Image (cartoon, rainbow, N blue to C red; front, top):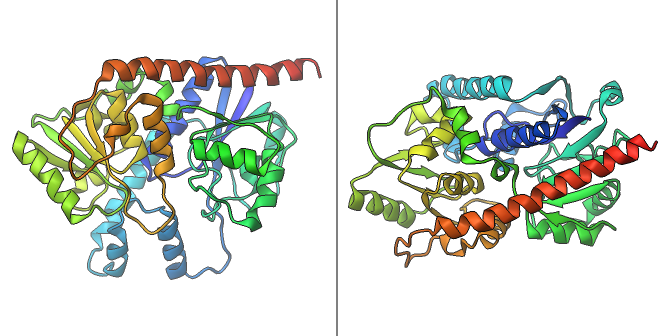
Length: 376
């Protein structure tokens, strides 16, 4: 079949690019032809630039929370434009190399859907495709423009409750799916509350690929001579957390490398392949990021997960589901943390079981679509 992936297209978010790549690779391994719809943030006519920046900041489109300060001091930090442009350029280059994007764009203003004629099935997910707090969210993420079959793989809401005004859209959209899987247990509850559908909880696509698959992307990346810990926070870490991490590094004579901060411009512009490479070589990882935890697990790294500090609803549900699945509930950072090591032998067994279950959902759902089409 020719399958179109509907996901968030974000040329600044590591997890977004890598889950897109992973889902494409898994679908292609089953013999399908795959493209990703270039689905862009809604264009708001005559929206003042200052308002747009505030809106995008609120939605989390700028990874480093310190960007708020950069925006205020933009006159003094002209170099930020240069490095932001280089960062996006590197993400786009990665995308052009590894992700098969459509040669057309769609957004909420699109009226020409002639591309639908060439699509056999749509797969929606992963990432927060159903988060109504994002301005990009619309009925398009339920493929409202088509009557073709559709399934979701690891679709995510990113929220635990949906405002009443959006419920009718969700109900209509979810009921149009042939099969639904979600990334978090909280998402399954939302699907079952708002629709007549059931939902299966599956792994994020990045966990369907093995270590060797990811290592293939790191050929030609940097080899670091100094041992280091990797710090990756999407929210602003508390001072006590910074001190805790610093103490951990000092005690073990490790350098500290930080992603998504202007304090390290080389890593600020790192592309998704270098992101993977950094986890491959890290001695330990400290993070509030879901995908940082994922790649720590893939490369069997010691890691601690911190609750994200930011203005918005909790995003802990995806990590809670992941940790419960793999027996990693003790990975949440506590003030009394005592550097407990991880039994990756036990984790591997649980991960393999969840991989099989997740792949079975995908194979079963797509086979059902193909069978229905052959009988049509």
